[in-house]
Image 1 (cartoon, rainbow, N blue to C red):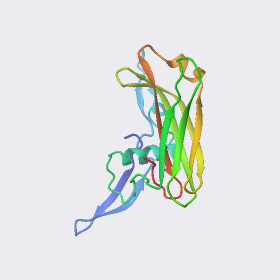
Image 2 (tube, helix red, strand yellow):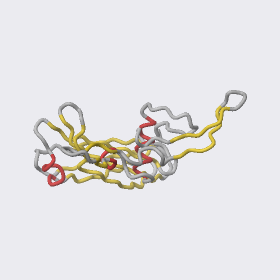
Image 3 (cartoon, rainbow, N blue to C red):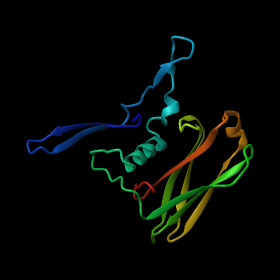
Image 4 (tube, rainbow, N blue to C red):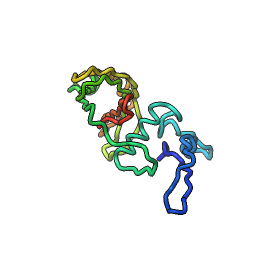
Length: 185
């Protein structure tokens, strides 16, 4: 929701809507909460969204649209079938470094470039997210009919100081095919 667009449209006489303007920066400019122990406000915008106008912010919005949020604008948000994406977290012990392996498979005879984003968060046993400890963007060039795996190193120093009892590490990977502009599913 904090990455939403404001769509200005006009309803025509035949009941069709015509989009006049889309403001992609109006929503989520400033998210505030009350600071603990005081009456002052605290800016928590960076905890809830990517910086406005960045590739990660647009990718987060497009991914949300793909998974059920409705957008009445004629933007193609269907998942890509040209390229498959999967990721695996390497087995490891708490307190050690490990890798997240993101694999892309190009199912076509075309070359593609994929913009990817990996997020790692500490999540309470209730499912509530505590904090993001890792955010990593990367580009992958995919040759026709080939697979490619990218390793993202997760260092213990990135998550150990934030880890709590009965909490876990959760990872989210999303990507967009630059040539087709489709989100990878």
